[in-house]
Length: 333
Ligand code: ADP
Ligand code: MG
Image 1 (cartoon, rainbow, N blue to C red):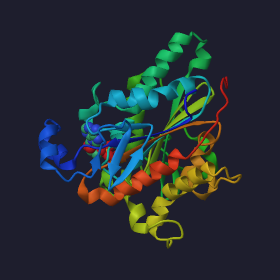
Image 2 (cartoon, protein in one colour; image 1 turned 90 degrees about the vertical axis):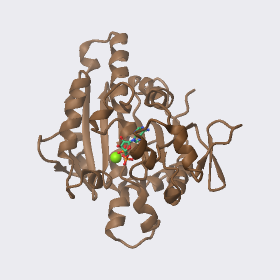
Image 3 (cartoon, rainbow, N blue to C red; image 1 turned 180 degrees about the vertical axis):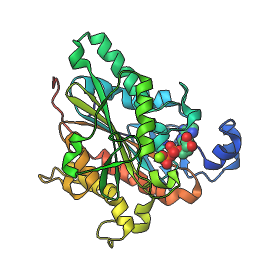
């Protein structure tokens, strides 16, 4: 039986390497960076060593791994689940700049639209379309639609409701966010462009904006949904500390990240009460982050020495997530 919870780590390209070498000469960069903080024990699969601590996960994707391999190993198993009626969530967590949006396929970088670079969402859609075509069901049950929301400062915005601006929706109305049909990759692309253009703009700098908000792209198929979640950058967590911290704006922005950690811990401990309602993010994910669903975490990390504490904190989050045990019933349809 497929495990219902899978946790993976992906190491991002080095920023200097990325900026200076345009991703061409990896070996030279490793030689230039003897102090990389992430190491892989040669005799041990799916493990990594950071700061003297050995971590093992379901998958460890070393720097330079292809988008195709990451998708096939980590995400593709969810397609079968969603097609058989299970709700699934794939969540990208990590500090800003570690490739969360790139991995999930929610980045609009024009240079990343080719087969090599496209990310998780368009690959999922391709497999869902193929899966539905193969199963020869009647047209009605094979409709695929998508919704796209943003959570910013504990507010939810429907990114597909209007072509120009994010539309604030009430927390209770998540399920009522706009759903648009998707029949092919072009339609996905249009929705992504529309949704990205509508993202809440607090700063004129799109990077600063997107690193402070959570984006959830949901593919609805049959009666199930697959949530692809591109979380806000986790770096603020270290600066603002952990639970019980003063109620600063930083806390507000990171409320969702703190709560998702608490929800995972409460579920792992088998608590009867799971604190979904403590944040808008966890409220939004409640229906697909429960014992009946499949959960996949992609923790994105940097091996730059200056990012060491963020890397440690991301790995701690991933380790907590690994404690989670979900037991969805088979054959939900
Ligand atoms: P995040 O969403 O975590 O802030 P991004 O996905 O925006 O990070 O990635 C930062 C930059 O690095 C982007 O320009 C992105 O396209 C690039 N990038 C990230 N990961 C990779 C990778 N594995 N290969 C090539 N480029 C990458
Ligand atoms: Mg991003």
